[in-house]
Length: 93
Length: 303
Image (cartoon, rainbow over all chains, first blue to last red; front, side, top):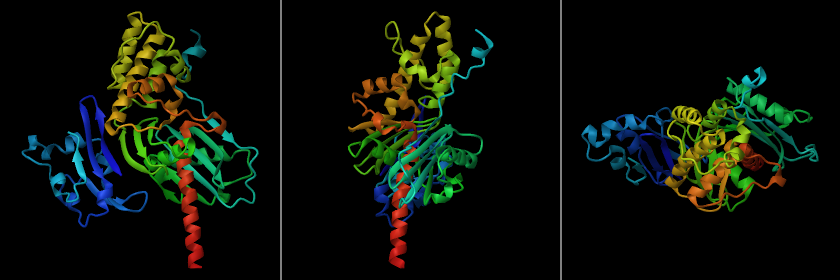
């Protein structure tokens, strides 16, 4: 399943997309460990598969929470995207 | 304008209850229930042997557990079926973890897709749910299993709450907005669709500038449709397309969304007596049916 977590408002679209089908092949918790803002969780989905998700309390704050990892924060690549070996994580902005 | 009209709650939508009077639940093998406690409305659907027996849609109160009880009590009122007779309950919606009598909680994303699949059939691939305080789009397979989803619940624009604000601001009963939005002289430009507060201000200014109420309604429906279509286009639309949630009953928004994305929504078959607002609870009841079957199979195997 392609899960789009985030929101859209007047300033733009801020979604972190996780292809949870790839989480089933994941042997580590690299996204969880890589995110300095602790935005990622591993938890069972509705079918009891362990998948990555974005912590619910921050889903409407991604624009601010992800700033430290964006180019404005001095990074060339997003830590969560780089850390995810199955390539399940992408950002919309 | 008299005092009655001044105090009228234009935002208040009709609560609904329905039961299949011809169905006899006694002697049935499985009785399941789905409870959807949303931020604005709560629904309960009771199924008997996989068929819809009763449902109730009501406004959510300040307490999720109380709202869950109220939804189910309303569905069962007048029937001799009680909560104790229900074999399995699934809770969903924002308040799903606060349904005290639920056996399991399942996300509204999964439940809406499953409910839409039950309502409109296995050909459904794209579902738009315009709820009270959120708007979501789901792509699913022939079994109603979600393949892709996106949700926007950050603000009221594109949601039922936004429509309630406009209904009150313009003094139009919310259930009349859709049809009245087509009774216009021309095609008015859209109001701001990024914020309900801004849209309300714009609507008020347009009335003062001499616009008719219907023209303003048309403009707001178009703005909402534009907002929602943007979300649909982000994950793409694959026919067949189906719309659930309260705003599915607003033809002013529905027709305009269809026009923007270029795909017509499958209409809900009226002979089913189902309501698009119950899709989440219906999907939860369908999940309950499957989980009950699994549980019984496991118990039989272990026995």
